Length: 363
Image (cartoon, rainbow, N blue to C red; front, side, top):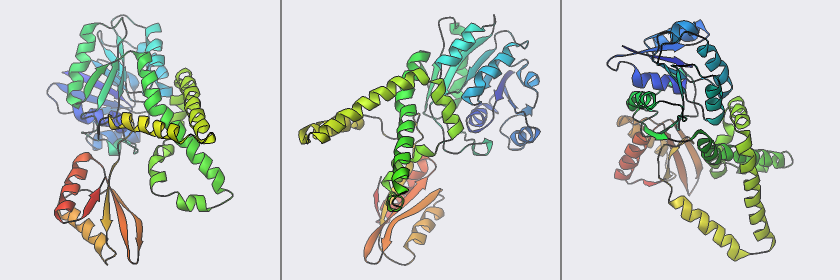
């Protein structure tokens, strides 16, 4: 029997537990410092058993997953390495920064115990064990960052276990990981926060900014609403990378500023064309480090009951709708209804169904 211990059974840890639980020869144990959480893990059926005792959960474990906040990874690892862990035990994590924890683990290495950094590049704007999802990792990139001291046998054992997540395993150097993820995830979060705060400052003098900043502005800045404490820890942990990225960002903004200042229309066009060409090559609707949005926009006529008709249509076909928003609706003006779904399958089913009923649908 393979014992898998999970510290931090929230969205990430709970989803991992659901992928492994009930698989032949695997038993999943969860840990929390709070008895009420331990009871919840078991009552929800996310884990086979749970305990408030770190030692009880960790002892005899073949695999230990640290699914705690980035700021707690080192303290948890230190405490685990002081225990009598099972020889050959593999410890890994799901943090979004890798170089620091990999270096920390290497400096405190215990013979026969193997640490392999991990980062499943998926997630949700929701949190907690209640929203754990068996399908969260499916088709997502799951990055592993073994170093030169990691035995191939240990790495292969971990990749074999992670096949149950149905993720795509990618082997990457820890520092390279932090540079890439810093650019495609951490920097966009900082830009979104800065942009929202800039508009919030303007709004203090003119409330019309807030009134008109719906729709597209709200969509492109949604990541500014991410958990503040979590992002404080991530950004400070990846500080050296972020400082370079911010300097590069300032240089890009300075370039655009100069083009506008000099009235260089051709230069502006070139920048947009360059950006568009690269963006068009990006994979569509592929799980990545930024949470995907499954939104559909439907043109609706100004008819009584039309919104209820659409909602009923989706409900009758068992398509789960997570949210809806009316972007425009007034007399004699067609409205735009934004429908939000929790996953790609529901979105695709909704698009097909709505088109069959002659609704104009756009992504």
